[in-house]
Image (cartoon, rainbow, N blue to C red; front, side, top):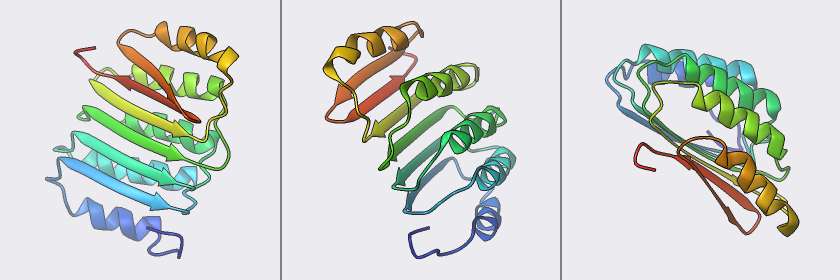
Amino acid sequence: MGENGDEGMESFARYISRHVALETFKGKLIKSYIPYQDILLLMKNFKLMLSLKHIDFEFLNCGITEMELMAFAYGLSQIPHLKSIRFKFIQKSPFEIDLIQQFIEKILRIENIDKFDFYFRKQIILARDVYRIEKMFSQFPNVHCSFGHQSLHLSKSISN
């Protein structure tokens, strides 16, 4: 799916639902707005794919908002066979750190998720806030937090 408005989410969801034995899903959306209803539809289809263990998504300038981010958290919680998630968000508008914290809290409540990797780019993180943010995320067991140029990277794995 790309900026030219390729296929709609309904036809895409129908397409992937035919691949019931899929173990890993990897997708990239570029400048595509994906409303929360479409996210829930996609997650509903993933739930039916009982072999699906890993989801890997990149969102490049897709305008993901708080509603969509929380729709992902809810939708992922409905997929009991999922083991790992990797999301990369690169957007013009940064997420609020408190929103990212809420998102991580919700993901950590999903018992079947052993591993996640979330990358948030275009974050405006001042040097004076790094310690506060590190401390915020260090309260979560097995969660590693790192910073790059305008980015926040959060990951969790069993071996952390």
